[in-house]
Length: 380
Ligand code: SF4
Ligand code: SF4
Image 1 (cartoon, protein in one colour):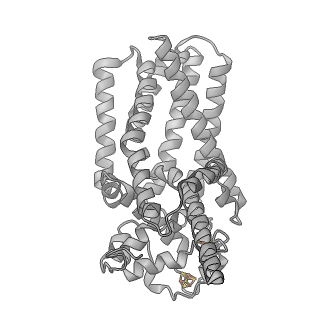
Image 2 (cartoon, protein in one colour):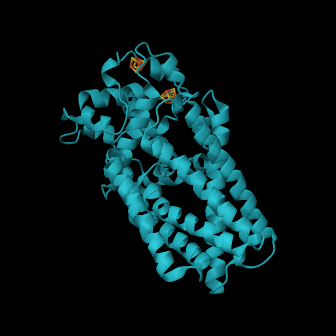
Image 3 (cartoon, protein in one colour):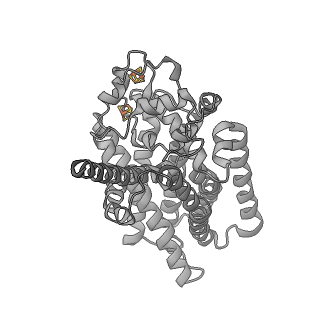
């Protein structure tokens, strides 16, 4: 059954979407070339870049909000070569991902930050300066590292509870919660393997022609995940069971410290490669870069480099240098954890595998419904 207002057109949708980046919808001939050439569209045709472009052109906001398509596009750029109007379909999908991220975000802050650099830079500076003032007034140099671990752990929990979980529920509600046919509950359970597989392997990206990007992307995701586990969970746990203790305040090197330093070094190399790729603009996905596209890799590589330097200095016993660099790290970490991670590009890492999962559930539910209808008409 069609929902009330589902097909009402919003004439302002195209302008609204363009607040989030390049979107060349008017040039599109609706020829379908991009959908044919895209390796990520499935046989059942439930993902079609052309369809999402048409939703925007027609002002179908409700349809666009319920679409998983933009998350299934990995911006490989294969479709750009086939488009007779050079509409840069991949970049349009990127713009839609920013738009949807803002729609899912119940706080409204993602929309504010995507649309206004003044707001975003103001928020980043305010939080960074507040952290610097707290360090100068209350912390330096006592229990600085212990505070850093506990701040990181608290930020992860707070951001997950207040921002990520509600926003994921909103994504679910917009895309699957009201879908017809309604998938049975057991389908969500059986398709969980799709979620795990795609979260761990980024398999969609591997289907694109450019395999090197998949490899770099995977290293950044794993490096980031390992850093979170080693630096946040393990350090906080050690500090929790022995108050006043932090592994990097102890002299010498041990296997744990060595592992952290190696992971940080590898993560720095791969995040720096992402920055260089964006500067070179050789791949399709790096041709157009919005502020948020630069912010993520530059901030992350700087953050990782600072932590690497601080930990190496402390391990070598150069304590004053290590503490000084750790202060810079904390000043950069606070806006990263409280602004860039919850309201910037990082939620894309969550939404992508979730979209593949929701998409699989939706496809299976549709196939079951078609099977039922076929059976009924044969019996009739
Ligand atoms: S190939 Fe280009 S013109 Fe054709 S549907 Fe896709 S975006 Fe539109
Ligand atoms: S950029 Fe790649 S993944 Fe995205 S629609 Fe085009 S061909 Fe498909």
